[in-house]
Length: 144
Image 1: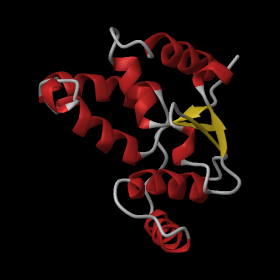
Image 2: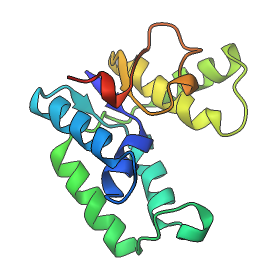
Image 3: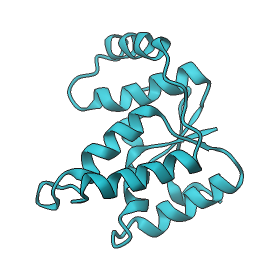
Image 4: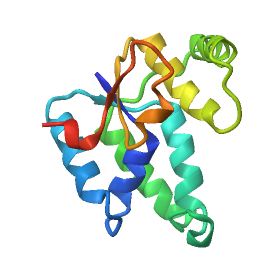
């Protein structure tokens, strides 16, 4: 199984973005193989960026439009079950790897992956995950 990073989901949403085609192609391939999953953290992060104004580096969607997109994601992809173990694993990881600031969001994705035995992440930002051993980093162009 491969977890989609939130930046992938955002680029799929933004059809006019230069990375849209790569993100969309990779997601379609992984979806056809039933190899792609999401985490609850993805949904929260996506909502934040999707509803943030474009002037503030967001997608500028209304909450209603964002809700339609999220509903489609929830129907299309399995979402990893949110468990108390994820919080415990996140806390272990941020301490062990001395994570600070925004990187803690990525660490929560890794915690969900570890708890659910997901080994790969599809992302445009591989450097955000290199510190974690055992995580396979997939750039969309690597999917084929």
